[in-house]
Each structure stands twice: as structure tokens, then as C-alpha cells.
Length: 530
Image (cartoon, rainbow, N blue to C red; front, side, top):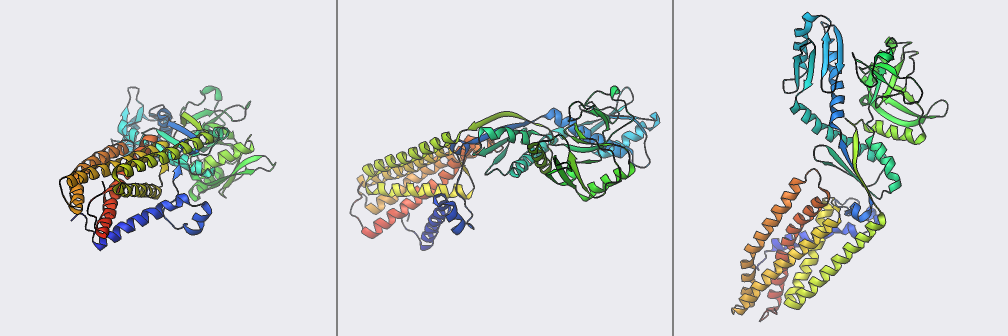
């Protein structure tokens, strides 16, 4: 019998309603009350999206061309290490180019041996290693491997961006991947004046390297920024200072840092103090011990910050980067270095700032539309269906509470499309009751008793309700799957629609039927007021 509820079903039903109410409760408590009474509770208040709270939205895109260049420089270093293995294969030239590393061995007879050794760098699905017509060996990525590198790079970029945002102490940021090349950063409450500094922090590549200076090389023989024979000419950060030729193989990189903080040098000028991990400190100590009297360059994003001469071995693992920094620049660089370098530079493809006052207007409009919508629905249902309409309105209010509770549990962000999804599911919940009540009315006209009319109404309407719910769940699921890497407003709408379908089925069908069952068994009415 549809109107019979076993005790365990009643306990489960009431427990679900109580749990949903408790999950929604943090949304009506003050921060102090939440901290005092609900600090241990799994749900938190719904976060407000930028369209409701105001803030900054920045869409960043990874440059695949720069990624390929940077990765080729890494391959160039690995090629050098491989050819230096015992027995050494002497090299006349080793140069990373836009999409390959070109190697010329000193002895032509060693070419095949060098190619065989380089093939151990990775399988044929990673590198293609071939001999050119001029005798040089060329190492390239396969396209499949480079696509994998792009996926890994955007994931690494998202993580680096998240660390940089967190290091700046911004509240409730949202960092999501969009497709295969973009990262979307949303920071509620940020003003237009703060966005420039955030963009500068997020888009700085932050590639730090320590390289030996080739004091014997003539800068006139090199094109700035173009590698040649494992050397490169790089400009100085300070204007008016001549560029220098550096060895392309790094002594250490930013990944060797264990910490970086804004500090001051011995003259009270802004600087960056850093600490190295154990292996990095060992390599740096070994390099400085072997090159006393030779300058080395501290390079940040292909520009020489400083190039001090090694006076003695530096084995402590601590150091300081000095330059013509302002205090703000030093703090920003420290954040970038602590957060890790980007695989390639991120370009701003879209930036948008929503004023907080516009967000407040949106909240008022959303709340007003929700209240008006619920009130009109309540008036309609009670006017048309009387007491049964009251049951439907109570179930509708419980549905809203349950939706807010589930969204809070998932840590969802509420946006205007999300509010639209809530209103839509409330309308759907009312539709379910209308289908059921009209069927009950038909059964009543056919002369059935109140109890059998209600049972027949629910039984015959359920097939239609389930069909409608299946189509809504499929539509919401498709939107969620298609927008798994982003989607913003549409994804928020799909989430509220999906959750709303489930809570509507529970409240509009099960809870309303339970209330109707209690009424029928308690008062034993002779007819249904419909």
C-alpha cells in the first residue's frame, strides 16, 4: 500500500529531513555562532559567486610555443648529461632550438653511438631521434608526448596559480581549469585597483636559474635570447648594464628552493632571502667550490638579476637575491618563487571586475524573485487544491531547505544561474503535485473512497513523474560532463538542477504523501477537499 509507512521508513524520512535542515542551518547563523556551535559540522554556508558578491574574474591561457621552447631546454640539459656518461662522447655543439635539440659530436664516428645512447632517454613514443643530412643529430618530441606535456603543464599551472593566490592571503578564491590551455581565477570581493597586482603575480613565469658566466665568450657573437652551442646571451634587469653570455646548463633552478621571503640587504634595500633543499645546496656548493673568482648569474625569467663573483665556496644552502627592487616587487617575487615556476607564461585573455554594489543588487533581486515566486505558487496551490495544496506548499519549503543543505555540503558556489536552477526545480516540484492531485480528483469523481483515490492518484502519476525526472537528470548530467573543466554559470545551473531533481522527488512525492497519509489515518475524512 502506497500510504503505509513502516516505522523504519518514518525514522529514515524524518532523519533525512532533520539532516538536511542541519546542513542548511549554517547559512542563517552568524560567523561567531558557526564558530561556537558548528565548527565541527561538515557543511559551511553557501559561497556567493562573483555575480552576487562582486570581485575579479581573470582567464589565463598557456602559451604552447613558449612551453615547447622551455621543455626543449630541459631536454638539452638531459642530452648533455647523457652524453657525459662514461665513456664520454665529446660534443662540438649542443643547441636547443624552437622544436628540437641539435647535437654535433666532435668525432663523426661517434654519431651512431651517440644516437643509441640518446634513445635511452625515452621510448619512440616520447622522442624522435634522427640524423640530418648535414650529419647533426636532432632530438624532437613526438606530437603525442607534447600533447601530454600540455595537459601536465596546464595542471601544474593551475596548482602554481592556486599557491600564488593563497600566498597573497585572498579569501575564498576559485581556481578552475578550462579546457586544455586555460585557467580561470575568480576572487570575490576584489576591487579594480587590486587586480593589476594580482595579474602581475599570476602571469610572471617565475623561472629562476643560477648559471655560470662564460667570461671568455664575446657577446657580439650571440643574438640575445637565442641559444648557441649551449650558451645564451641574456640582458640585465638593470637598465644600461651590458648583457652577458651564460652557460645554458643550470647550476640550480627554482625547484631547488625550499623557501623564499622578502628581506633587506646590508644597505637596507629590498631583497629576497632564499633557502635551498639539501641536493640543491650540495650542487651549488660544488659549483662555487670549483669556480672561485668566476662570476655566476642569478636569472629570473631570462633576465639577469645580478651576477656576483664567487669569492669562496657557498655551502650553507642560504643566499640572497639583490637588485633594483621596490618593496612591493620583492614581496611579489618572493611569492612567485615560493609558489613554484609556471611551465610557460600565462597570458590574460579576459579580465572582468564586478562591483560589489552590483552583486548586492543581484542578491536582492534573487531573494525578492524567490520570495515572490514561492508566495505566488503557495497562493495558487492552496486556492486550487485546498488542504492538499497546504501539504504541497510545506513540501515545497522543505525542498528549498534540502537543496540549500545539499549544496552547502558540497561546498557549492551560488550564482544567479544557480538561483534560476533553484526556482526551476521548485516549479518542477509543484508540477509533480499538480499531476498527482489532478489524478486524485479524477479518482474521486469516479466514486472511489478518499484512501483509494489518493493511493490510485500516486500510483498512476508516478510513471509520468519518473519519466520527467529521468530526462532532467540526463540533461543535467550531460551539462556537468561537458563542462567538467569549467563552464561557470551553466555548470552552476546544471548542479542545482541535478540536486533539485533529487530533493524534489523526495519532498514533493515522498514527504507530501507521508503528510497526506497521517491526515487520512488520523481524521478519516469522508471526502477529499479538492
